[in-house]
Length: 282
Ligand SMILES: N[C@@H](CCC(=O)N[C@@H](CS)C(=O)NCC(=O)O)C(=O)O
Image (cartoon, rainbow, N blue to C red):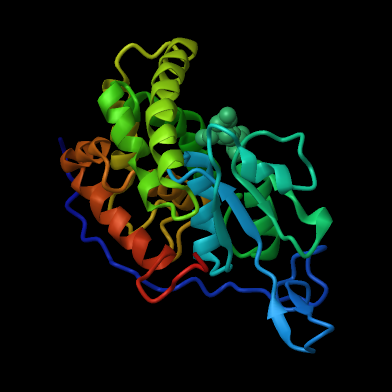
C-alpha cells in the first residue's frame, strides 16, 4: 500500500455555522418552535425531536452524524426491529423503516428516511458543503457503495450477526425478554437479509468488496484533514463517518487496521462531530 508523504493537519475546529434564523423551517426552529410554553406552570421547556433508529443502521447513523455535528439536541428512540412498536405513535404510520425524525410538539414535522432528515438539517445549516464536486462524489460513494456493504459484512455469519445485535443490551427501554428475542431472531433475520443484499448487488466476496471501497476512500485522503480539503468536513465526510460510527466495537472494524489514514481521519471526524464535551440528549 502506498502512503502519502504530505503532512496531515489535524483540525479539530468545532462546527460554527449555526443559523438560528427567525421563523426557521416550519416546526423546527430550535429556539422558537422547539420551545413550548407549559400553560399550567408557565415554565418553558424545550421539545426535542425524536430520532427513531436502530443503533447499527447505517442510515440512522448518517442522520445522527449530522445531528451531532450541528449540535442539534435530540432523543434517540431505539426501535424494536421485531415489532416496530415505537413507530406506531408517529403521525405518519405508513413509513415502516428507520430512521424517522419527529418533533412531538409539531404533528407536521415528521421526516422519513435519512435523505429527508439530512436535507432538513442542511436547510437549517446551509454552510455545510453539500454541492461541491467532492461533496457530491463522496456522499454518493457513502450511500451507494459503502452503506450496502455494511450488513453483508456485519451479518455474514450467524455469530457475527448475533454480536452485532449485542447493542440491544445497552437499550434500557427494552426488557430482558425483548433484548434476547431481538438479539436471537433479529440476528437470524439479518443474516438472511444480508445474503439477499449480496445476491441483489452481485457481491461474491463481501470483505473484498469492502476493502475495494475502502481503498478508493483511503487513496483520496491524501494530505488534507478531510475529504473536503477545507478545515471543515463536507457532507461526504459526514456521511461516510456516520456509516462507520455505527460499527464501533464490532469485529468488522478490524479491517481498518490496514488503513491508518482512514483511522486517523475517523479520529479527526470524531473530534469535530462528537467531541467528549458534547452529549446528545440520550
Ligand atoms: N433510504 C432509506 C433506507 C432506510 C433503511 O433501509 N432502513 C432499514 C434499516 S437500516 C429499515 O428500516 N429496514 C426495514 C426493517 O427493518 O424492517 C434511508 O436513507 O433512510
